[in-house]
Image (cartoon, rainbow, N blue to C red; front, side):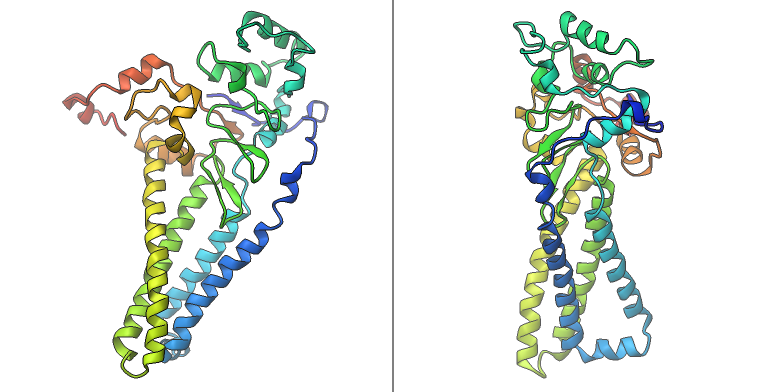
Length: 344
């Protein structure tokens, strides 16, 4: 798989800056969403501390259980901010990083019919278009980034699969333009409203850890509410009713978070994204993939390593596997496959 942006950027080969669009100004309102999320944590946690005097006394006494709970709250909030501030991996950033290896920035305007006519079939990887690109890159020591992108797609892919109609940037496989951020995101999963950012190639692991920590924190908080209702509900019906209402709301949030955690665990194990599952029939290069086949999966262990433990510099791009390989993966498992850990 090609790795782009592994070397230091070269000033003479920088990617032209993109014009400012509405998306660059649309990120400011997300700050208010983040404030709301932080206030919700303060509300639910502060409420149980105000309702239950036993917990307050345990905190004053330095109870290890409540100290550990406080550490969990702090870690969860830090993970939330860390994930919200992280970049999902934008194509524009990849192109700027790729300029260090003399990668060519290609705007769709340079490939338009006004500048150079494309073949009637519209295929960008035809002999004519390929030669034109190679002419532009004769002085470069390495192949242009566009040629590398073309090699990632199946032979005969249409030019519309390679470029974005909104921001006019090269789109590697698994990339989608996010209309909230107004940028193309590598390995796009979804745009998270509560985080105010996209989830993609660079921050999917951080997002999983945030879901895990948030789910653990809410389970712990639900346990504190149940303990309060079990011990003190008879003393004050108003406090008991307030605690019961908050407990029901917390359980609803917990159910949603557990579903998300299980979904993204499944996605991590199989190297898939939410967008690919939801829009599989609309993605051109996935339409012919057999059902129950994970086209980008490299086995459970390798998928998890690439998601969270890989220290490879630059942007590693995944090619669409050939159809022969995908059809071979669709065959049923045999005893030999199980022994050889084919799924791992």
